[in-house]
Image (cartoon, rainbow, N blue to C red):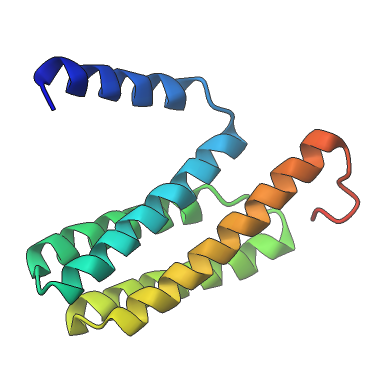
Length: 133
């Protein structure tokens, strides 16, 4: 990819972030975390431990950001925080042991959060928020 294409891609990403709602930003965080964990699993499988470490750390940074964005005035946020901390623990174990089972467990949990978040966003947008916490 040439330099102009890279600049254009980066500007597009920057504009997407700037113009997104908080809800959409959270969805982007989930997507980024999923990408980094998938990349980490592939890196571990290929014994590219430097890349695995990098991707696991990025995923952990995102999970930490998700923890920081929780509104702790809701009871469910405490439960979510515990699950996010568990995910970070699985990422750490996967990094230390270079074990994809830990990473895949973290990945499955993040995917579940993403699906739940997506459905909650959809329900709120359509006004069908009877089942949304």
